[in-house]
Amino acid sequence: MDKNELIQAITKAVLEQLQGNHAQPQNQETSGEILTGRTRMRPKHSYAGAQKAAQGTDPKEIVIGVGAAFQTEIRATICGIPLEDVLQNVQAGIEEEGMTSRVVKILDTSDVCFMALQAAKLSGSGIGIGIQSKGTTVIHQKDLYPLSNLELFPQAPLMDLDTYRKIGRNAAKYVKGEKVTPIECTNDPMVRAKFQVKAALMHIIETEQLDPEKGMIVWEGAR
Image (cartoon, rainbow, N blue to C red; front, top):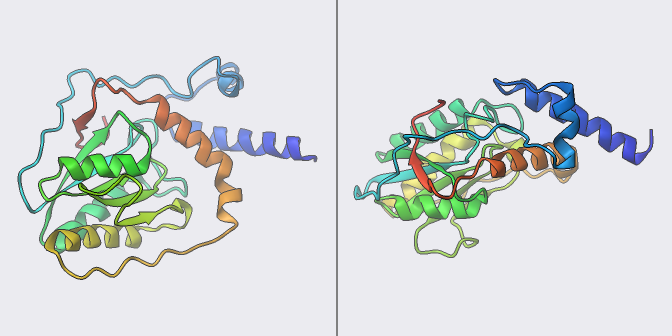
């Protein structure tokens, strides 16, 4: 099997896995068109009637901004952790430190740093967390530049629920002004190559669901 055949085989396997993770499976004809640009990876999700997220005022509040495909087109991280469990653990970590959380869905960007920054600006405390649907996460502060975040967790395939819980705790500690020990991240140079195709496809799915006119909306789970 040459390099092109290997890439095609990996892509096919990833597409089948992603389709199996969605409530509306596509037929073979549609699947064959996905990479040619003749069709969308997923049907456009409707947020008709969605409530626009309001500016927070509670100094104990941390806003969690999730991606446009979060719990709708994508229901698990790149390594298979249910997004519902991810969210519950981040919120639990925040609550353990005495802070409160609010979840919004961000529909005008799929860049996790910008997502986290927008969440921070919306938060009453000025601290926010951005979570892409594939699991990449950032803790941000409202007065920082987009790429100058507080903590970045770029290797989603290596993250587990304990890490997400720690992220919630650290975000709360930033709010309280306590000394924070950054969470140690596992690093594996082989991860990028192993998950590159799947990560790219998941990012395409997320980006296709953007709806800038909606901006940020209240999010309370799968719809």
